[in-house]
Amino acid sequence: MNTVTLICQGCGRPFTLAQSDYDKMLEENIQTPRFCSIQCAFHGWDYQAVWYGRYRRSQSDKKG
View 1 (cartoon, rainbow, N blue to C red):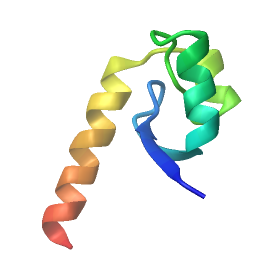
View 2: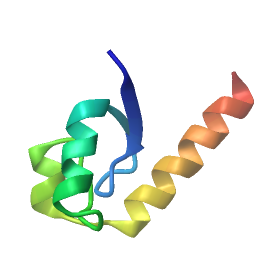
View 3: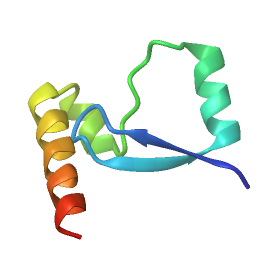
View 4: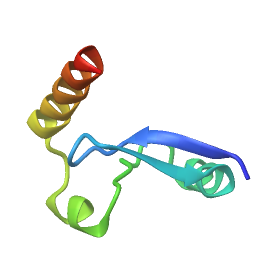
């Protein structure tokens, strides 16, 4: 099964979806934000959390 890795628009964490599910989402609406959980979808877009999540992951990649 093919998967797609996306970045959550609420918390900035990477998450995976099945390719078929992602294709269905794109067919419905290409501009809809993608969230990793219902909690993130409830809170909505959080640009600071996404930026901080990417920053933390880049720092942990440098250490490891």
